[in-house]
Length: 85
Image (cartoon, rainbow, N blue to C red; front, side, top):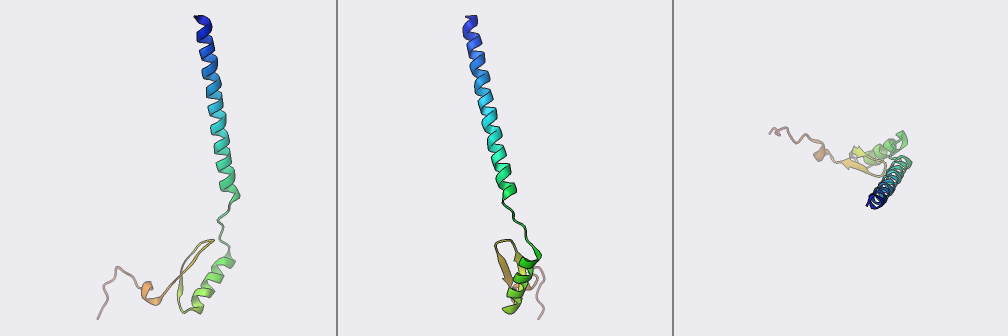
């Protein structure tokens, strides 16, 4: 009976070691992939977005590394202010 308990303990330890190694490699892969891809916005991207918006008569609302959003003058007004007559 002692031999069977020892075999069970070895099996459990082996399974735990495999689970820990797999978890480590998954975490390492995720960290590597997120550090490899960059979402940096440099000054040139912001300037090009501002120029593109100004060319259409709008103002830059937001800019990301993949998207430039322009606002029209009507959307620039504060939505929390009651318009005066």
